[in-house]
Amino acid sequence: MLLVQHIRENYHQVLLGLQKRNLPQVENTLQQVLALDDKRKACQTQRDQLQAESNAISKEIGLLMKEGKQAEATAIREKTALIKGQIKDVEDEHEHVEQQLKALLYTLPNVPQEAVPAGKSAEDNEVVKQEGVIPTLFEGKLPHWDLIKKYDIIDFDLGVKIAGAGFPVYKGKGARLQRALINFFLDQAQTQGYFEVQPPILVNEDSGYGTGQLPDKEGQMYFAQADQLYLIPTAEVPITNLYRDVIVNRSDLPIKNVGYTPCFRREAGSWGAHVRGLNRLHQFDKVEIVQITHPDASYAALEEMSTYVQGLLKMLELPYRVLRLCGGDMGFTSAMTYDMEVYSAGQDRWLEVSSVSNFETYQANRLKLRWKEEDKKPQLAHTLNGSALALPRIVAAILENNQTPHGIKMPKVLHSYLGFDSI
Image (cartoon, rainbow, N blue to C red; front, top):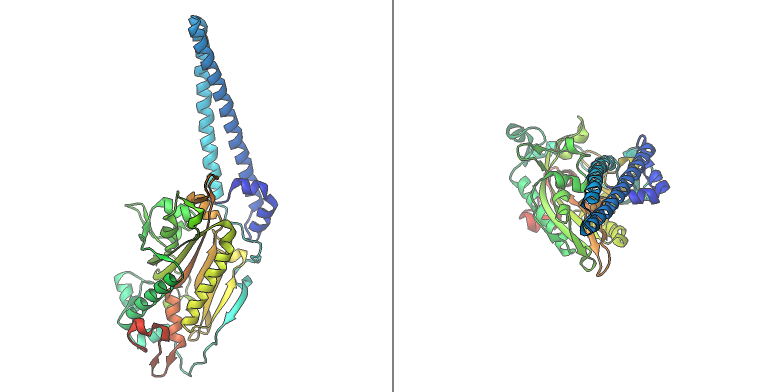
């Protein structure tokens, strides 16, 4: 959530940044925010003035009572009752204005960082790097949705029988490949100083608001109505919320966590090959990295996290490219995002497998997550997260890029985790 003080002090910069997102009526919304903040401050001032007047009268009543002037004290006491009623009215108005202001701020996304390109869609994203050799496959190559049937390693029909579309069943070497990738990603993260946690996969409403999934993505999350809990769309939500309402010492920064969870997303996209098979699912596995940093260090941390994810893709021998997302394609809470895409040779297209984002103070303001130095006032921290990695499209690319007429070779780095070198 944006800070009103930041909007007021950097109005032109905030407006230009939000215009990169192509938001309708954004200037009008910012003006409404400032008007409500002025009204909130006016209520606060009026309340303070009335309270001061009430305190002064109470003091005067005490003096009159000491002097035995009870009739005068009683007359003034009636005025005190009137002022208390006025204070209650002003406090009610103050609370109403604060709720209006908060609701309006929830509709404003984060301000893109200066380096974020303007643009409306994925076509306007900036390719900042490309590495690896795109494989040339044999005639008769197959997309992964045909390979998994040929080798009987993932079954979508069984998933439909049990749950519905978008819930695959991994079998035999397909299941072992899932487990191998999860363990590989977790082990690699620990070598880079990430502390492993295993969080809940259901979260309450406060957690959803804390990281910005609510109210922005309410319709995309599975909701257990009886218990008022949401199934997580990403481990970012529970892991970052570990630090809700927490003040951390500066000496403890950066805080680096990693966690594996299943993830659940109601939206499965439109029809077509680009969402077929493993390309988009309702349930999938993902290893997530999260950092909490000092504000001065967050963009260095973003580059570090991007480099780390790229290292995983190199070890898996997958050709990849890095995109800096434009304002119109960037997530609601992000100030800057890098997407990593791998080339999937069976489909002849790039597949997004990771997003690494810096949220600056946007999530921390909602979470009340702050850092402090001794004898100094706490300040908002910066939060970052990244997929390291999401499994479905990684599996799709591994299967497609490494297929031969006789089977599918596995990346060497996974052999010890798998217990086999090919399917």
